[in-house]
Image (tube, rainbow over the protein chains, first blue to last red):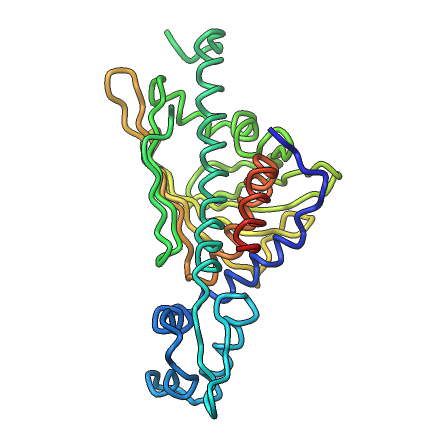
Length: 124
Length: 165
């Protein structure tokens, strides 16, 4: 296995922003609605029982996390979901999976070692 | 292969896994119940866990830290919500300060463990979920050292690809 000498602090920070962005139902909904990149911030704002400013704020969080991009189209600002960024979020969950796979593997190793050298006092 | 299934719910931001071990249920239970065993598998070799307190009964507290390659310590706690040896365990877990005291402003997750034995083999089902979606961020961080250190090369390559594309 390759062990990178470079610190992963940048990747960690990216990930933090990703999860912060995804940790809100409205923001996840905005992501779903913005896949086609045809909705403006004001059109999005119509869909939620909250102020335009609040929706704008959500979009800003998503943008900072790299989950959406904004593009000016005339007087409107269109929001588009970045599918790669959503894929990165999935990868983050993959990391959690990897952590648990490692744990399960180590549990299995311990149990296997346990079999070859029985511990005292457990088995009759 | 010990892991037989792994479900990741991106929407619910939770992880459900099933594994099977070629060992009787008591042995698998011990991996959780015995702090010296717990610390041998919880953290990877490069990020070992040290369990400093292990009060394994309902309401009991488990304190541990993981030590990174640069000597950096990451403190965390678990609280045993309920247990039914050797079949079921529910713990809540979160971050702690250097003295092991839970950090009140940090999110908390719940881990549900179920064990069942069949013909000398033990099936382990584990569900890891957050109290609220916000908590996944921290939860992932808790599992993160492991994920990162274990396959840091592969993951960085994946991330680099995703960023570059």
